Length: 93
Image (cartoon, rainbow, N blue to C red; front, side, top):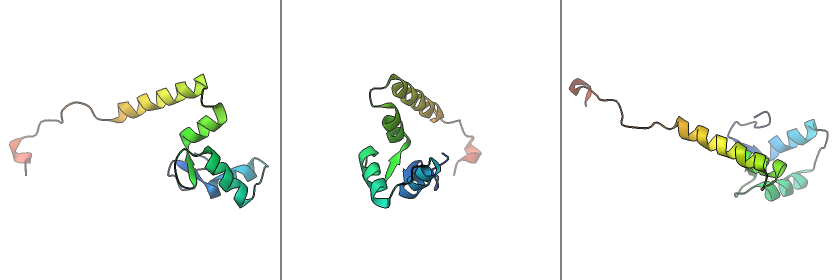
């Protein structure tokens, strides 16, 4: 979240550049593009939070699987369930 400058849920090249500079490991534009291409699971010049976790923890990591499982459960809880509330006849269009 700290480095997601445009708050779209992904890390783009400028966000990555800022992150690397803050960590004391500045990279060139071409190095950053190559890094994003290696890490990203989708097209474009950004990588997602889950791509970042896979890079940092490894694809087979038990910790990664647990984090992703809890995040999926949290998304499921946000979805409304059941029937919508009943409306009175006066509320109908």
